[in-house]
Each structure stands twice: as structure tokens, then as C-alpha cells.
Length: 165
Ligand code: FES
Image 1: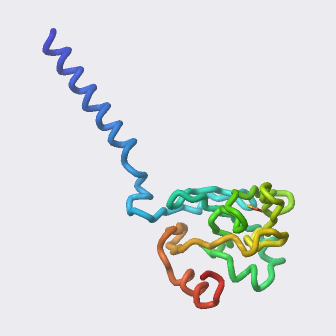
Image 2 (image 1 turned 45 degrees about the vertical axis):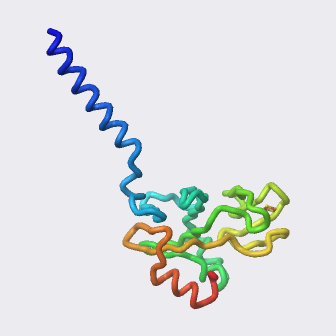
Image 3 (image 1 turned 30 degrees about the horizontal axis):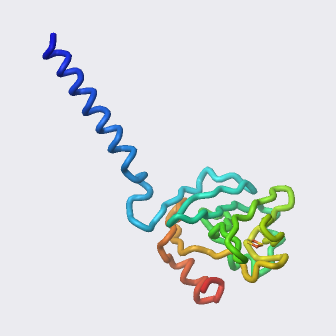
């Protein structure tokens, strides 16, 4: 009986160790240090998704067809196109003093409550004090996913066009 109990307890301990190990491990999508892979296939239009990359919030906003149709060239140049859909992907920190702006679905813009700065749905500042647009992180598009932290050809084009520094 003692042996049987010991064996059961042993199996239980191994089970908890495996469970603990699984919770320590990074998600399969976040295995490579500094890179975060995000699957955009289930992102809904006009609903802000916030991911995390290198400790920073990342805003992901899928634009509606109407939003895309109304865009200026400058706004279009900032779009990340994944599987035919247009996304705004930026670091979610206000370029004034680093607060996290809130997305207003009805107005399709961002308000930074700290000092009243505003950004449009492409992350371009529309009301001061923010001095510049929300920053687009390095990204690489593969199928329906983006890898944050990697400079793919789309990001390099933005660089060449002066959209990102
Ligand atoms: S930190 Fe956003 S407006 Fe000042």
C-alpha cells in the first residue's frame, strides 16, 4: 500500500513538474527572444487588439473597408497589409510622454488622456501635444501572421519611403 501510494504521489509530482515547466516556457509563438508572432486571422475590424512585444504594448487595429477607402496617401503608406486586410500596427505609447492612448471605436481615433493628444486610426497625430505619429515596430508578414521584431520587406519599404526611421 505504501509503495502504491508512493508511486501515485511520484506520478503526481511529475505531472505537476510538467505543468510548472509548461507555465515557465514561453508560448510557442514567443520562443525566439525579442520576437513575437501574432496570428491576425481572427482579429475583428475596428476592435483594438493589444499585444506585448519587448515589454511594450503593441496596438493592432484592423481597418474596415470604409476606413481604407477614406485614407490619404500618408495614411495608406503606414498600413500593414496581411492577407489582403489593412492593419495599423504601432507601439501603443504616446509620442509625447509615453502614456497609453485609448482607442475610441465610434470616432475611430485614439485619445491620450494624459494631456489630450489625439491620433487617427493610422496612428498619425491629429491634436498636439504629441509631436509625431505612433511608432511602427519592425515587423515581417508571413501568411496571416506578423512577426514583431523582424524587419521584413514591407517594413524595409516603409524605411526606404521614410515612413519609419
Ligand atoms: S503623454 Fe500623451 S498627450 Fe502627453
